Length: 230
Image (cartoon, rainbow, N blue to C red; front, side, top):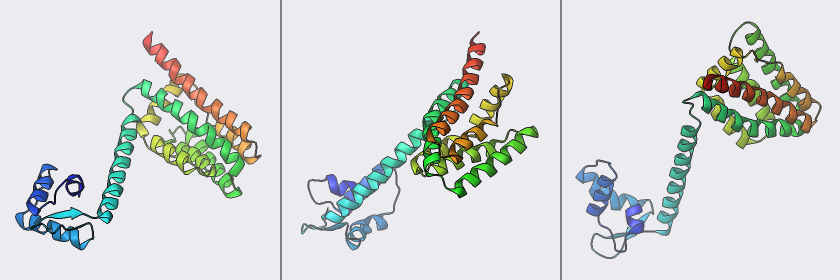
């Protein structure tokens, strides 16, 4: 379709075959000979009147534009995933800065938009997280559940999607918790302070509590990095 769209002249089956080969896709001569007909049947191309030549239709151009948009979104998604992949302790710090921007606003919106069901979901997640951490566990899944429940209560699909991508990385959490425990700063009870702001419908209170929570984690990582440098 891209070959048809960019060509100034009608395109035949063998030229389409060469374009497919150039894209690294191997097809048989039989399939190659059917390409124009298949595109014609889908309304994406049409005979030009020139022997064995075909041109793209308006429908074909729309379909090509849609496919290009999908590929572009996938490329951006992959770039984002690569950007948030943790390779060093310093990268954990970068991720926490991103989380602060997302989660402070999520907490604020949750206080404005959260339902009783949302609040119950956050409460249950906090309870489970406390149980696991008090028993000596890392509580990776339980911690993620708390933060994702708050993002869900914000009713912002964008914040929830970004946070979900970040929290999927177990390595990030393990490094973060390891650092916090090294400096003695694991404080799961801070989740409850955020919840109170949400429960009472006080957006600035919830946002401030979340900022304090993430800032504490940031300070722990910054302290670890400073000690490592010394």
